[in-house]
Length: 108
Length: 116
Image 1 (tube, rainbow over the protein chains, first blue to last red):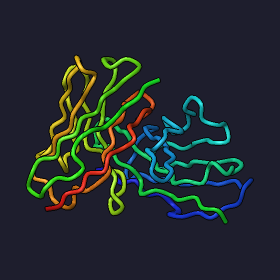
Image 2: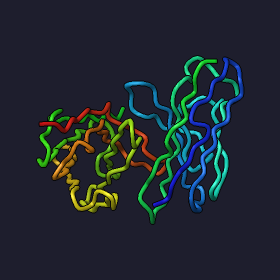
Image 3: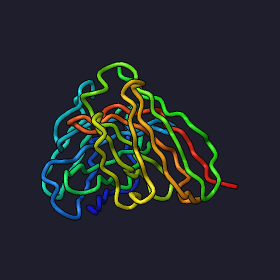
């Protein structure tokens, strides 16, 4: 299976900060990567697909980049609604889909 | 607006079979793949498998020997069965729609506890 490793596991930030989360794949997944946001007691919500495409309705302060094995999710200016846990997921066709372990964004 | 709703027992005894349904409303049912995912505090999010409306399936190899996903297009419903459950199968189970972008619509999730 392709292992997805996120860093950091927890991130403390303030409103207005620029936040970057990294996701590394154990082998190349081209651009078959999605990012999700999850709040306590809720299902994950799709934010970014194909590494850098913004899902409809998602604020433009969210952006994704990368290809191959290294990917980033950036929040350009952290808002109160953004405190949550973020997951990356690879959906390579020839491998079981796997998720990163999550990055919790907390209030500093 | 596409909505998914999981249903099924919240408590299953060890060694028995877990069965869940996911009912889909709104949008097209036949143009998509449909997936099950589970989440535990220890292992995080784990993809279980998906099914196409035609009935073709793809399962996570780690669960393949115990998992069956089926579909009933007349009811806009797909189902999960997981046999020979243990405490390690205790999790929140989600159903979700698979779109080209990814898992774009999710159910609210249902907690299934494996305990005698």
